[in-house]
Image (cartoon, rainbow, N blue to C red; front, side):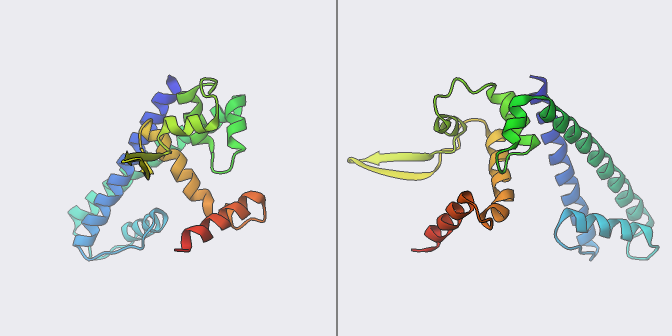
Length: 195
């Protein structure tokens, strides 16, 4: 239960940071200051903007942007502290350690899975877990003709989101490897491209 609460707090902090960055970009965009896409690029640009003395920002706006940057750094510190805690939890638990050996499953996914699912003995097959998470196609049948639609999106939204994000992050590196998984991913990409 504690791990699920930690994940909820982590999720809220990440959302707060995202919203803060969006607000900062909007404030600066209104003043004609544009930064490249990406959090790191924006962070570097923000620090450079606040370090130099220029007439682009009024003194009040400079103070406001500086305060928001300090708030951003505070959120980063809190998120990193929780990430360190998740890493420690994943290292100390055998089930979580085994899960991190799976490609695209990191410490965040492993801790969330074990906290939510437990030992997974209630699932007879791995497919049952996928169905429980809502990662199976929605089915609509009429007149004896079954139609498969997109994923059903039922189940734990947070866990499903983490798993999809982990897969998207790992997909480019996994699909370029010369392993059975890499070959399967390449063939899946080719099947998707052919009409």
